[in-house]
Image 1 (spheres, helix red, strand yellow):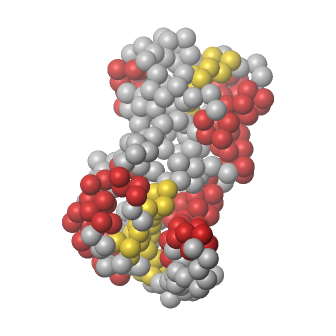
Image 2: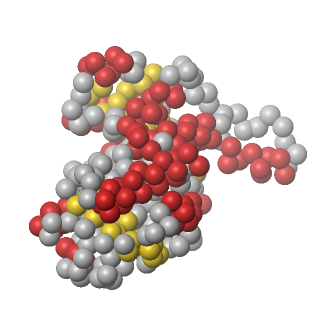
Length: 314
């Protein structure tokens, strides 16, 4: 069986090597991002590549589009369905991905509020006692998207003495009670969350409803001096609006694991502002990489054996 890994050889924590070790009888080819053809492959692992209707027309033996992780927004599900190609993913709550993302969110929160980006400069100046940061205790954290990742963030916040509010497509009062939320609202209540929150965490997918959801109007709704953390998808945030909010001081800072284009331009002037970044690694840890690989490898084995696929979406 031939599998196309639609990313560079060493991408995503060297997960391709793990696949080759786990499935020695399968041929894995690293094709780089956004391959031009799927001819000759039974399985494609899209990673961050787009698998659209045009690309699917090049497939002559493709049986499975198997994502590593949960994100399928780059896959044309209808086109795959029309061609009889199965699509599956590895949900964040079964792979360890959600837990890894949540840990990164806590790091971002503490780093932003305690102004750790300024610490090296003060050390070089031989200054002690500065800068004085803000305490996370007593802050209001707004979680936009209360699925597996949002819930994992909430669990980790439970010991920090914060007030939590959240947005979910279909609010559930029992879920709000389970996680100790002050309230859990619908998307229509997003403006209320923004007005109340000292830190806003985005865990949403990039869809027609959420693309560039955080634009100039949304940033104006945020509490002055608040922080934005995006571990969802880069397309949720309008770059120019974020730069304006940071430059004007309406936002005290932001942290991004995902970007408007990936990889982003390293010389983009926005990176000179109070912006913490990580190279789309929030969901990658030793635990999650192994969990993601095992989930995807299991489905490849199931395909070879003619068994039912796990977490099939099409």
